Image 1 (tube, rainbow, N blue to C red):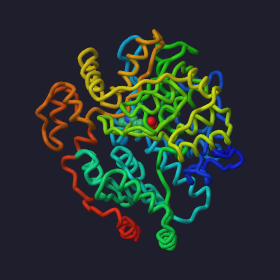
Image 2 (image 1 turned 30 degrees about the horizontal axis):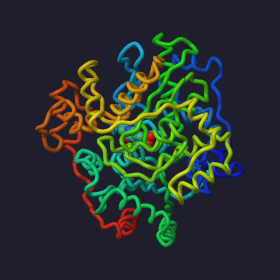
Image 3 (image 1 turned 60 degrees about the vertical axis):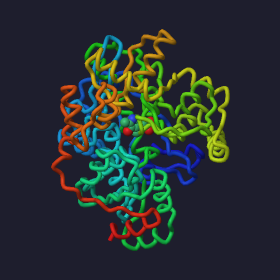
Length: 495
Ligand SMILES: *Cc1c(COP(=O)(O)O)cnc(C)c1O
């Protein structure tokens, strides 16, 4: 199967090229030329499979330049018991007769980014071999928290890869900083940047476009790439868990073949919910994709009106992984809803770049209406929902997942739609102890890693092992750099 750019359908490449390259040369996003369909019995065939086998089955239909035995080896390593603390990998938990929670935080960094970032390094490393690339890839990441740690864990000690992560010195939580400073692996590097996330991100962008640096590193056998969620290798592993969730519901007899479900997804860059759309196109009977946003509600407005307008204030919220005003993966959705009109997509994206705004055609609006619902909420409602779910269901959720539950409640009240719904849970509540404890009415918060035990004590829930283990871990990376000197740090780390 070939991959095409969302901005030029005639620009094609193989899956291995798409994964190695990340972005199309014209700035568009690389997308499968056709979306494969599951066979009529496909879902049934998968119900008795393990998560790893389901991953091979689904990913194989998009990656014909990879063999089943290659994919099987990657799935075993990516989703094995040394990485995930439950055999189910992505378990579905029932909360009431029409509400389910898909827990995507059982991996090594306790956030849903692990689902893709445990798989991507294997796909990337193999893609380099397939493309006969001689050099070692160096993944550069600027992170506001979750992505950096998940990428470090995914790429650690993977052949022919190096990974360097830059985070804003005062822009991540104590736990997030400790997670990165204690990172293990021979091919990893971590450095704090004086400044905020924008400083780190702008600095990394400058590294990518620094021709002199690129030449020096090419001489040492390295080239740069990105593990950002626009890479197809991050979207594909996410399609798997939506299909897997439906198979689990079938297996448990909670739905019968063909019964519709809704999914409700806490959304930032639009990668997760886009994967749900692809699962729907493949044949999972998803009725509505419910897009949940925090106070940064640019997507809520877009889905309701067809106008995307990023000219608005930016808020720092309690669900920081959703604090985003430009949702990059929406471009792939526009490509589908315009019936793959690459010229229209290019125009929308250029209006976004120049004016920060675009309005889609009536045809696209109709598709948005048919497939999506949307809602948003603020921090107070987020915390109220954590308290409510804890009290009523004895189930502890994090701030991002709480946004989704709030939006689902509102959606049900407004529409009366009582289709069984899978709410996607994207992080362990232990990653956001302070705001979760606050929601439960605790005001006197413990310092440092003691806050993990505090949340455990208040709720009786165990601290996930990867977070509990932080305590005894050796700190390996304490370097801090000015943003002007980031290229020196890269040259030191890539000797
Ligand atoms: C990244 C992230 C999200 C947003 O996912 P997108 O694919 O960017 O929409 C939501 N919740 C958590 C905890 C995340 O880390």
